[in-house]
Amino acid sequence: TQLLEQSPQFLSIQEGENLTVYCNSSSVFSSLQWYRQEPGEGPVLLVTVVTGGEVKKLKRLTFQFGDARKDSSLHITAAQPGDTGLYLCAGFGGSNYKLTFGKGTLLTVNP
Amino acid sequence: EAQVTQNPRYLITVTGKKLTVTCSQNMNHEYMSWYRQDPGLGLRQIYYSMNVEVTDKGDVPEGYKVSRKEKRNFPLILESPSPNQTSLYFCASSLSDRGTEAFFGQGTRLTVV
Image (cartoon, rainbow over all chains, first blue to last red; front, side, top):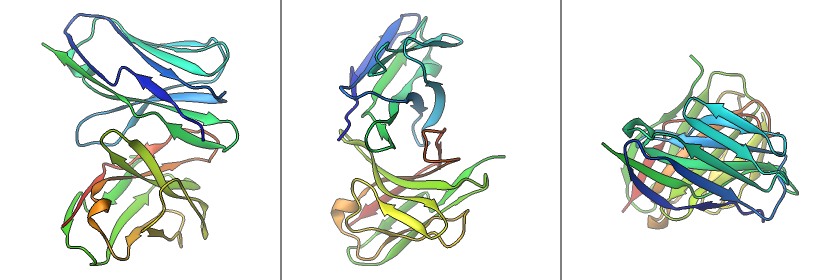
């Protein structure tokens, strides 16, 4: 069984602060996705990273895929209340060829 | 607009009363799946389907059934619901099973009393 560990599980910060959430595994993934889920909604894809060491930016969000393709991070600069939500990482590949989700990081950005 | 539509959004039912949650996608996707989301446990896959008439068990299939008679529809059936199936359910579809973007429905919050 491939596991994706996300940390921290909960994060509450003030508007304007920076933060990083992590997604770690002992398994190698072909690709890794990050989703954001808002209350009462389904997860929505933010980005997919495919190459080891890859960095992608989406406005104030920076995503990095580890060199060994076992881990990933999401960095948010100058967080805003609209960033509040559950951030999920999901890895694809390995022995079971399915999308495996982490348990998520619940981010609250206070005004 | 590309979307996955689930119905109903909310459902309260009694133990043992059969129910069906419908899921429909308009993107001609081959791969569809059902997840349940529980606090502290994250998203867990119940069943998936790689194409019409092709379904298989996910990580937590006990107590659930699915069917895929048409490409666009993938209903989830609980033949005899029990309280431990109280959860938030999501249907998702993607172009393939090769790690392509998963599009999720809005969720169905099921309570079994």
